[in-house]
Image 1 (cartoon, rainbow, N blue to C red):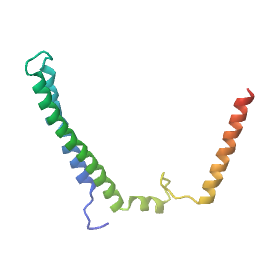
Image 2 (cartoon, rainbow, N blue to C red):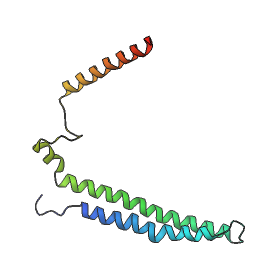
Image 3 (cartoon, one colour):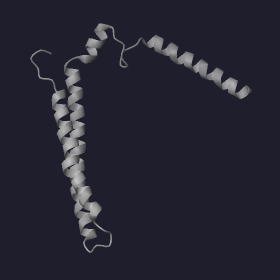
Image 4 (tube, rainbow, N blue to C red):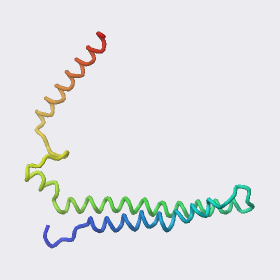
Length: 124
């Protein structure tokens, strides 16, 4: 679509900031602090509780960012009409629509092939 801004760059930014940077700047430093705590330390339980709360918050942000990035990328592809262009160009892709009669024929052929395979296995 001319004049419309694609959404997939936004998805890339969301993914980079929300997953990579959150991991590097949020989760990894927390992991490093926890790694230094000994289970026998007096404040080990308090450290664990604080770690768990903060790590979970960062992880929820990371998950939400990844989902929003995926949604943004998919919307950008749909908005640009990528699937429609592939169909018009004659390119084969996994979402191409097929005639239902040929689909039924394929299912019947596979069913017969499966039965022949079963018969071979039983007779051996």
